[in-house]
Length: 313
Image (cartoon, rainbow, N blue to C red):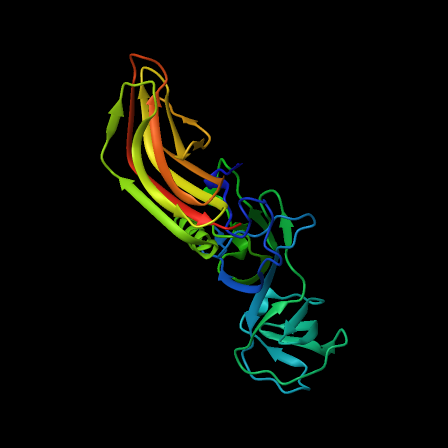
């Protein structure tokens, strides 16, 4: 039987084998503009994969302010202040070495690094050939700090922090996608992922508050699921629950096979159970149950959702 904490679920990681998709989607140039005022943060479309050495690269970009033929050595750009002598810029597939500058005019060596000089259109966006430096502390100008996310501050997952001197600049970010940082998108992706793996499903919902003084398991939601062959039932439950005087408990049940048991505190909080249980062919009874730990207490439960899906693998 497998157990997974949904708050740690990542749609690009198999929740039962804990393996990453292979390969993960690679983003070579996600374009984002650093805010011109605090906070100097950007948030990527998905959370980048954490690796050592890092595979997150941030490139400063700018645009050409004129069209270029394949021989011009003075290049007019939109933001000359971004660039310094000895910087290497990449315009389309051509590298150029900056040897001098005057305001927005850059003097360059064309076809640098073994690349071929080529014509380029006006307003073409180009980048610094070298990434800014990633830091694990507050960054200085030309540096960045990636928040890969923790259980304590999940809202920061996918956020990149910059120095105020880089406010207003547009960057290209290269990284490997590991999934959405947004909870609602996690749920949507989880449902999509499950549906691609299943062909039989059922669900139940009960918004009303229920309570019991019993120390035996009581049904909150119950329904049947037709299982066509041996395989697995994937059960997902979410609910709010608390215990008065004593601890309240909840579990999912697939026929006689229970899930892990969750226990609750003295006030309403949201809980989630997500498990895979091996089954044989036949009609299965799926339940969400709850009880109080000791006589004299009361268990309360509401806003309950229960879903069950059959999967062959």
